[in-house]
Length: 207
Image (cartoon, rainbow, N blue to C red; front, side, top):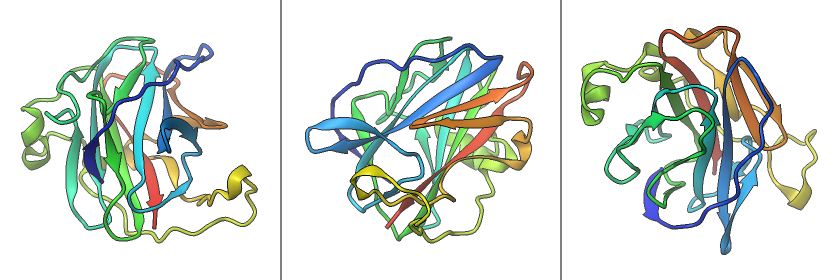
């Protein structure tokens, strides 16, 4: 994915109480507005997307993209997407945080977007995290490339193509995380307080 500048915002999301959670919504720029979409939607080259999320605990978050071209990029925090990566409890955040958007590019497949939420800031500046190994192992070893496929058993309005292998997934280092999908809202929760970084995947399928 690459960055383009845009500017638009949607109302906040209502959430229920839980132990320790993060909620994420994938949004697509459609004509002149942003709309929430199924996280397993198969996107097209040139589509513009962003993420909206909030948590019920404080910490620091990092977003890494492992693209279908094989390149791995720190999407957030950085100059183009926003440097402030501290999370305030129950405050809504946008990624990118600068009014920009991610644009789908690269060969067809699934971009693996890793979300790392840590109770403390990771060592090293944001631009050196990938090189220095400051990120958890799960974010440094992407899975094999997957080709998007429409799941004919999933009926969606507007004829959307849904790939059931896309969307949010736990990583081997975060097997205690529970992922619940409620329409377009994904909730990732932990049964206990996190004392180390939690890593999970958000697979973006695209042609």
